[in-house]
Image (cartoon, rainbow, N blue to C red; front, side, top):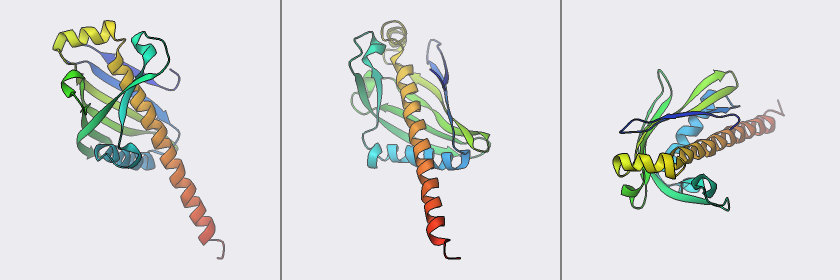
Length: 182
């Protein structure tokens, strides 16, 4: 997938996730954007009130005619700014959480230049049914857990980008309106 890097590893207990997505906006406003978005998801507010993880049916080896979405709950948010921007959280299915993986990890923004940043997601998830759940996810379900997290990162990257660009346009409009008479 262009513009994205990801890796995952398996051990007997918990598969690990390390996903990244480049952004063409500065890190400081991107950090503010991802922080507010994650808090909106956790609080089920606004456009994020029905946040879900999803995978295309093709990921499951079915005809590519749609997707499956699982509404999730994000909890235990804690944000650190130094030495690295990081928002730690847990995520699980809203309904029947015992049937779906539980993700424990962090998301954050790293600066990659004056007007570029990197959105990253890292952590691990517990598969239901222990080793059997890992086996089903890897070999029968087409790594749906990893794909749903990749889709989440893509959606969040687009939202961060849009929010920062909208904020900058609003500020430029404000400066234009209130600085023209000086």
